[in-house]
Length: 150
Image 1 (cartoon, rainbow, N blue to C red):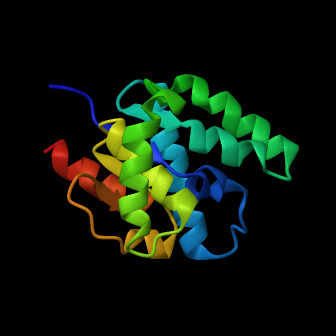
Image 2 (image 1 turned 90 degrees about the vertical axis):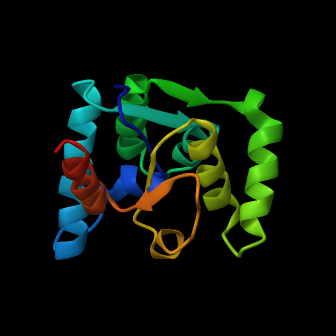
């Protein structure tokens, strides 16, 4: 059986650096750290893309930027600009539904990477209906994962 492949958007990568006094944020941050451990232990596969790299490079926080970039080395799949036409076409279709450009490119890259799950904490993106991939937050992903392992 192939490993579950996930794609995280940059909001999720940055969740542990957000205000942890809010319970939802703290739970999502803990779930993200657990997902990260599963990736490092090679229990699930990580996909990431040129969009992740670009957004991370724009972070105003050098420590966060370095930490996130260092984690990318654990990825099994990288979607770069050579996937451009397929990703661009899919992202343009997604944007027609009102999803912002970067979010649309993240979703398109996640689909192109053959990820089963697109993990985000963006409430608007979580509502996006899509057939090719499951969009969920980090806590929801752990519920899905538990269901798959039974």
